Image (cartoon, rainbow, N blue to C red):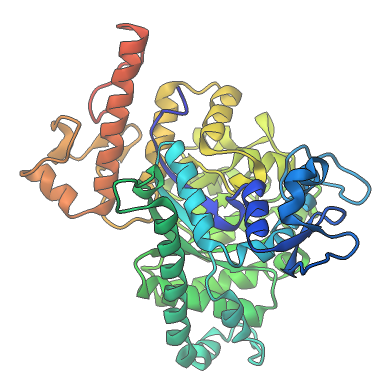
Length: 479
C-alpha cells in the first residue's frame, strides 16, 4: 500500500547522494575508469591499456563479483560493519562522496534522471534537490579576500562584479544537466518515462567546512542565483556539522545568513542544523544550533534537527518553531546510520507533540540504500502512525515546499481547504470559477490539488480492494 500512496514531496535530498552505487560503477565502466577495490574508490583518469597493480577496470567488475560487491559496500551503507579502519557509520557515510567523485562530476544529468525515476516510483510529485553548480570558482572568490570579523558588506561589494558571470555559468550547467536528463528519459516524446512528470526545483548547497572567507561567497552567490533563476528556490548549508571548522564557525555562518536575510528576505533558507547526537560533540555543542538557525539565520525549514531535546529550553524552542511554522525535514534512516539515533530516542514524536510541522525525506537515498516509501514504512511501524497521519505527512511536504504561490490550505491542523475549492470535487482542475482562479495564481496550490486528486483515487482504490468500511473514511478537503 505505501508504495502506491501519493507522497507530496521529498524536500531534503542531496543529488550527490541520491544515486545507487551500481549506477556509479556502470558510468565508471562507460567512461573507461578504473577502481581500487582495496581503497573502495573510483579512480580519476582513464585506465589505459594496462591497469597497474591494485587497479581494476570498472568494465571488468561484472566478471569479478567479489570486487564488485566490495565496491558497492564501499560506496554506500550496504552491509556496513565497523572495523578498526572504518569505525563508524558516520565516518563511512561521509567518506563515500569522495570515493565516487570522479563519476559524479561528469554525470549530473544521469544522476538527475535516476533521482526523478526513483521519485516517480515512490509516487512523489515534487523534489527539491540540493546541488552546487560552480562551487569551486565561487568558493575561490574568497581565497585572496580575507573576511574581517563580520565585515560581510565589504566582501559582498568586492565580489559583486564577479557574480553575474558565475550565475550565468551555473545556469548553463543546470541547463545541460536537465537536457541530459530529458534525453535519458525521453521526456517530451511518446516514450517519456515516468520520471519526466516529477517537478524538480533546487536548493543551492553551500559547504560549511571551508574557511570563512570561502563560505561567505558561496552564500552570497546562492542568494544571487535564487534571485536570477526560478529553478533555484532556496539556499542550504551542508557537510558534517560536527566537523571542527563547522563547529567553530557555526555562529559566524548563522550571522552570515542573518545579514543576507536582512538584505534579501525573500530568499528562503532550509538549513542543516542539529544533525548531532550526544558523544559526537561535547555537550555544549548540542545547546544552540537549531535556535541559531531559526532566530539568527531565519531558516524556514530545519534539516534533521536531531539534537532538539538537548538544546537550551527545548520546549520553548519547539513552541517558537510551531508558532513560526518552521518545518523539520525528518530523515529517519539517515539519522540512524549516521548518528545512531532511532526509535524512541529520535525527536520525531516530540516535534509532533509540540505542533512543529514535519515531513519525511530521504537525505541521501542512494548512499543509504533506501527510498521515500521505506521512510514512510519506517515511520508507520516505529511510531504506530495510522493512514491519516501518513497522509498529513504527505501533505506537509508540499505545504512547506519552497515552490512559489499561496497554499491550497487555509489551515493545517487539521487540514482545511480554502473556501473557494473546498466544495469542488477532486479530479482535474476546474476550468472556471473561484477555485480555478486560486489554482491559476499559484504553482503550489496546483501541485497540492494534484496531490489531493491522487490521494482521492488512491483511497477509492483501497475501498474497492478492501471492501466497504474497511478502508479509511475521508471527507474532501477536511483531512
